[in-house]
Length: 146
Image (cartoon, rainbow, N blue to C red; front, side, top):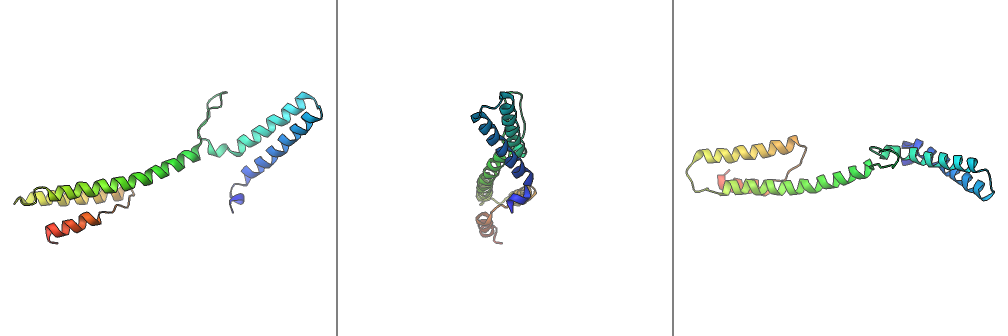
């Protein structure tokens, strides 16, 4: 359950809510300003500490901070989109390479195509990408008579 995984955050939120509610009640009842201010600051600090793990960095009294979890989600979405684009480009590069000059009698050219294919597969595997080159592999099998 999500509540039990980050119980500290929920505890800080609970005490922050209580402190802010107390400061509101004391403000309505004309309590001393120091008492209301202290309670309000404690409530705000509780909420800051509850969300502390989400911040990557802080910057001075202007309270300039960057939300780390939101940036991580954006980066994951962007990486997913880029993986599809890179897979498409790799397939097209490989297809173009083995289709160009295919009537040539140069044997080393076919070794270059095979070398490019192996390099693309190994580089994508080392980057942790699951690349889909099935259409290029099928075409290569047709052209190379594999």
